[in-house]
Length: 185
Image 1 (tube, rainbow, N blue to C red):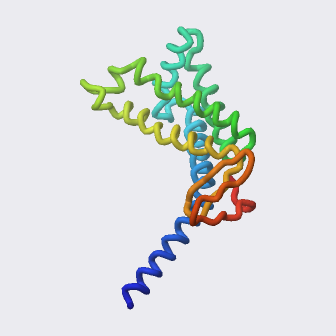
Image 2 (cartoon, rainbow, N blue to C red; image 1 turned 90 degrees about the horizontal axis):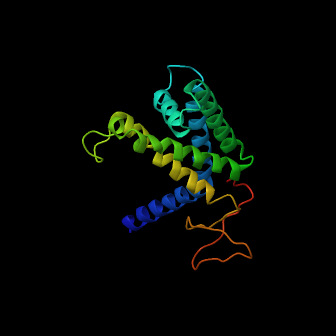
């Protein structure tokens, strides 16, 4: 009997935690991504501070066939990243903000193709420290994709599932809707 009571408490606690994550997870993701973009963007305003400065400048120069030099591209990239960050945090023009994020991510991964000798050791399975720095951006891209899936108003279900509907609400069996008025996605 005592084990049943403990298990019941654990299940209720877990359900409350799941509901809290469903209510707050997207906001936490959006704001944390925004802060990362602002932080890394601001670093690019100061020469010699960003770990990605040299490779970013070289990538943009190569991508522009030598037309855009790092002295121009790095401040533009800094502004671009800060715009993404502020857009994510404020939720203003979120669709455009995410487009900028996706485009920036394409540029972020190009050094893996343009400069493989600097981003990988001996094999594509062994990235250098610079390669690891670039590859971890998959997480930022993934976060942007998740946020992009919520540009339309979502319906959160108590089961933690999210549904989007243009014409009406569909409730899955054994689920109940969670109020979404106070949820900012």
